[in-house]
Structures are given as structure tokens and as C-alpha cells.
Image: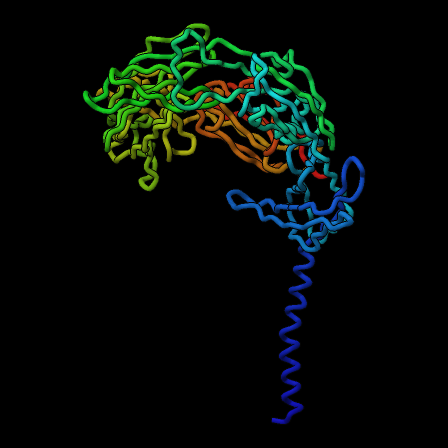
Length: 540
């Protein structure tokens, strides 16, 4: 073959390869977008270098979001020349600064939507210098308190910024001094003294172990009477000195029974809603005592283990108010097996789940901080189930792999129908037989999620709950314009709670939020429709 022919063939082959690549490149460029801007100090308005800019492409659940990163240069500028089209979360970070651009809608990031071919230029990202609060915590004698937790609680009712604002907290050092940093704003300062760890000392001189109340600056046990401190960006506010308020020291004591004779001592656990105290141990007579407790509601239970033998008592809630509790009795017992049946209303074969989706009955301990878990009991073809390792406690019945609109209609023990789905096994199983009846016409609640201004809303959190304890039972993350739907709801009254993914409610408690949410009453077979709206967090 002549050399000219060979050259011609090679050129044609090269053209055949480059042309598809060229059009593929054009297609990719057409599908991508660009995003650039400048980071500035919100107070001085000067460019801010060294800021780490992250934009995360929001993926469909359960896929993870894909982050893209860039760093601002000496002129504060950053650039993402090629990004896939989609909706992003913008989250800049730099030491000594906070990002407060979300104050227009809440959270620690804002949204950014990029269409194919978009080129967003000169986006200004403002970062605010952190505010600094310093002070000292002392006891009633003026001595420093080490390890006290200090938190700045936002005064503003603007929930949109409270996620960022509420991060201002820290602990005192050995001199009682604290230094906390965060976003500018108005705060009330709260101090909680750390609980005493380990075995409490026994005092024989009649004195009490010091116990301190939650104290607000400068020295009050009431949030309403606390002084307001204004934290200013880039400045240190010093001299926030707090003297703790001492409360009466209370004692909780009693006896643990059921431990094998001649065995090692049992352990007794004491918890509150907010923290758990390390265990104490009984003496050789089974007696225990925990001193230095503040007024609160405590959950107490005993545990014994020797080799493979484990014994637990039922958890007991003890309210300590102004007097000691000295006669608490805890009886430990081995785990038992709980047997029962699961039936469908009507009892027809067509009402049962498919064979490859066998129902599973669970019982979940409802006493706070009770750490024992049980494995679910599979329901066999005769509709029987068995759950092992059941210790004394109160449990809530839950069933998995049911038809879409099925719900637990009744739970009965030895033929007696319970008022709710809670099994009180505090005294042990004792051979009790449980019957769970499933209704097939549960209620449903559905609606759309939209924003007040019609812009896309990312990942609103929608919750329906019949009580504050059950807010995790029915929860969905829903994109703007989409429909949320909850099925298989028991007849009753529910609260409909809606929030953004990073929204916080400031100093509101979960109980307050639950009480302020709208109530929906659903009857068996009802299909309730309720559309919801909330303010989006779109980028400026």
C-alpha cells in the first residue's frame, strides 16, 4: 500500500475518533453549570482568604450528597467552573468566622439551584467574625467550679438562626473560667454543674454533699429573671461571672433482692432525662444509697451479672422533690420468653401478609434510658410468635411487615384487652399470653409541601405523632412540591409538625413545639388531606 493511502486512512480514523469526542464534550458542557463568587468579612467588607467553600449536590434518599470544594484566594474569590445541574447546599467554613446568611430562612447552609448552562458569577458570601464571651463560675463560697457546662441560649425568637446561635457553649477550667465563641446575638447564659461521678462519699458530720441548681447569669434559677448579654462579632465580652445556686442535697436508697445467695453485689443505675449517673453497688445485705442528688425525676434499676447469668429489675421512676426516698425496693429476675399470637381482623387468609413478607412482632422498652433490647419475634404460619430475653419492664408493641394500611388495633394479655399498646411486664412475664389484633383499614394523612414564595423547597421534615414520646414513629423527609403520606395510623388525635432539615426552635422544648403544632383527629378509614407550607432557605 502506498504511503499516501496509509496517511489518508490514519487521518480518517483520527477524524472518526475526534468527532464523537467533540460532540460528547459539547453535550457535557451543555449539561453543566458554573458558580463563582467572593468571600468577605461581613463587618469590614474586606475580602476573606482561606475560606473553604463546599457545595453539595443533593441526591435522592438514600444516596449520599456529592460535595464539591474550593478555597478562596487572597482576593477572596472562589470558583466552581464545572458543576452538574441540580440543587446544592452551600456551606462555607473558616476558623474564627460563622456563616449567617441562613438568617433569611434558617440553618447552617442555604440552597442553590443551578440549571444546565447556568453561570452564576460574583456571588457574595458574607462570613461574620465570631463573638467571644468569657467569665468565671464559682460556688456559694466564691471558690472556682471546674467542669461546669456553660451555654449561651439565644434570646431572639427567630428560629431561623438558632442552629448557629446555639453552638456557643463550653466548660470551665480548673480556675472556674470559661471562654465560649459563636455567632453574634443576644443571649442568656446558663450554667449546669457536672454531676458527681463514681461512688458518693459518706458524710458522718451531718453536712450535705453540695448540689447546685441550673443557674442563669448572674445568679438565678429562673430563665425569665436572667440578665441578657449581647455578643458582638469580632469582640470579647468579659466579666460574665456566675455564682451557682445551692440546693438541698437529696438521697435515694433502698434494697435489691433476687441476687443468688453468696454471690457478688448488684449494680444500681440512676438516670434522669438529661444525664446518667454511674452505677453504685449494693453492700452484702443488698442495700444501696446514692446521695448528693438534686430535685428531679430519676429512673432507677438494678443489674446483676455472673458469667452467662444476667438479672435485671424493672425500672422504677422515682420523683425526688423535697424529701429523701429511703425505702425503694428493686427485685432482679432472669429474662423470660413472651409468647403470643398475631391475628388479622376478620381472620381471612387473604388478610395475612405475603409469605415472603412475614410479620415480625417487636416490644420496645419505653422507660427512659433502659438499655436492654429484645429481638423481634417472627410470626409463623399458625400466626404464633415468641420473643426471648424479656426482662421486667414496660414495653410498647410494634409490628413490622404489615400490609400498607394495617395498624395495631388491640393488644390483649390473657384475654384482657389493654387500653393501649403498652405491655406492663414490670413483674415479669409469668407465662402471660399476648394477642395482637391487626386492623386493615387504618387512617392516612397526606398532603403537599410547598414554600410561601413558590420556590423549590429541599427536604422538609414532616412528622405526625400522637404524643411527644412517639415523634420518631412517623417521620418523612419530603422535597418541595412533592406529596407526603402516612398510612396505617391508629384512630386518634395527632399533631402535624413541619420543619426544614436544619431548623431549630431556639429555647423551645420539644413539649412546647408539640403543643403548638396543629391537631388532626383521624378515625378508622379516614383519608385526611393537609397541605403544608413553610419558608424556604433559598440562596440570596
